[in-house]
Length: 582
Image (cartoon, rainbow, N blue to C red):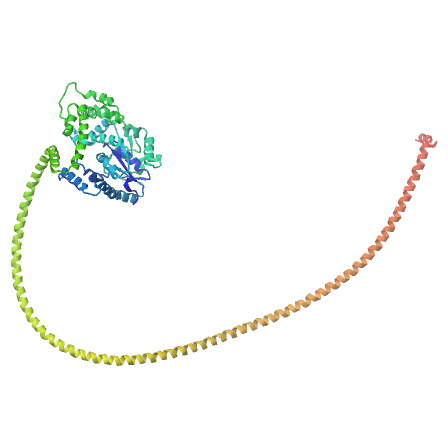
C-alpha cells in the first residue's frame, strides 16, 4: 500500500486560538494538500495509553492499565500496537486522499499536543508543524470567544493553557521528530515568506496565490474560527495586536499578569516573546497588596496548579511531572497487584470530587429509573393477565386438536380403503400401458418407414427441381446470348459503314496528296526556271558593274585633267588677268 508510516501526512499542532485554522486554510488551498476541519482521529487510540486527562463513563485509569498489560502480552509489545494502529488509520487517510485526488493530508487538531510522542511513533515519516502564538494573546482570545468572560469557565482549558506549550517546545527540540516551528505573528507580518518556508519544509512548490485563501473556501468548517476567517481574503496584520485592547479590562489584565508569572520568564524567552512587555501592559491591574479575589487564575485553575509562590512552585511542578512520568512508566512495567492498587488509590483521591458529582447524577438517574421500573411492573402485570387469557385459549385449542385427531384417524381408515382400490387401478393401468407401449412400438416402426419414403420422395423432388432449374438457367443463358449476338451484329454493321466511310476519306486524302505532289513538281520547275533567270540577271549585273567601273575611271581621268588645267590658270600670267576681271 502506498504512503505507509505517514509519508503523506502533515500534523498541524498548536494551542487553541493560535491561528491554526488560518494556517490550515492557506495550506489547504495548495493543489497538493487536502484538509477538512479537525479530525480528532488519533486521540482515542493513542491517548488511551495514558492514565490521566481522560474522562469517560468507565474507569479510565483501570482501562489504561488494562490496555498496557494487554500490550505487554503482544509478541512485539508496544511496537506491534503502534504498527497496527498506524496501518489501520493510515488506510483512512489514504482513502480520503484517493477520493480528493490530492497528495498530502493536513490533519489540524490542536489537542494532538497530548499525543505528539505517540504520533511520531505511529507515523515516523510524518511532518509536524508547531504553530506558536503569544500566550497572553491566546488567553485573552479564549476569554473573549469561548469563556464569554466567564472566568470560572477557564478551568475547561487548563491543559490548553498550561501543558500545551511545554509539550510542543519539548517535541520541537526532539531530533527524532521531523518538525518545523512558526508563529502566528510571523504569519500576519510576513505571510509569503512564512508560507514559502513551510512549503519548502513540506517539499512542495510554493504558489503565491494560496495566500489568498478565500477563493478556495466552498463550505464552512464545523470547528475553528467561524467569523474573521470567512470575511478576509488573506492574513490581516491589523489583528496582530487587537488582543491588547482587552487588557483595558482590569480583570482580564490581572489574569494575563498571573498567567505570565505562572509560565515564567524563561518560557517566554524560549518562545521568543517579551515577558517584561506583558508585565508592563498588565501592571495597572495589579493591586499593591495581596488581595483575595474569586477569579484569580491560581484559584480558577486549582487542582494540580494551586500554588502560592508561582515561579518556584511551577518549576518544582515541572520536575515533579517528569518524575511522575518515570514513575508511571515503572508502574506500567510492574505487574504486581500491590503497585497497581497504590496507583489506583492515588488517582482515586484526585477524582473523588468528580465521582461524588457522578454519584449524585447517578442517584437522580436511579430515581428516574425507579419510576420507569414501576411503569414496567404495571406493564408486566398487564402482560401476565394477557398470558393467562392466552393459556385458556390454548386449552380450548387443545380440545379442538384432539377432536380433529379423531376425525383424522377416521379419514385415514377411509384413505387406506381407497388406496387399495388405487392399487388395483394401478395394476390395470400397467397392463394397458404395456399394450399401448407395444402398439406405440409398431406405430414407431411404421413411422420410420414412412419417414424413409418421404426422404426418398424429397430427394427425387429436389433432383427434379434442380434439373428444372438448370434447364431454366440454360434457356435464360441462350436468350441472353442471342440478345448479345444481335447487339453485336448491329455493332458490326455500324462498324462496316464506318470503315467504308473511312475508306472513302482515305481515297480523297490520297487524291489530295497526288495533287499536292503535282503542284510541288510544277513549283520545282518554276524554281529551276527562276534560278536560270537569276543567273542571267547576275551576268547582266556584272556587265553593268564593269561598265560602271569603266565610266568611273573615265570620270576620274576627266577630273584629274580638269584640276590640272585649273591649276595652271592660277599659276600662269592669266592669274593677274583674272584678278582684274574680279
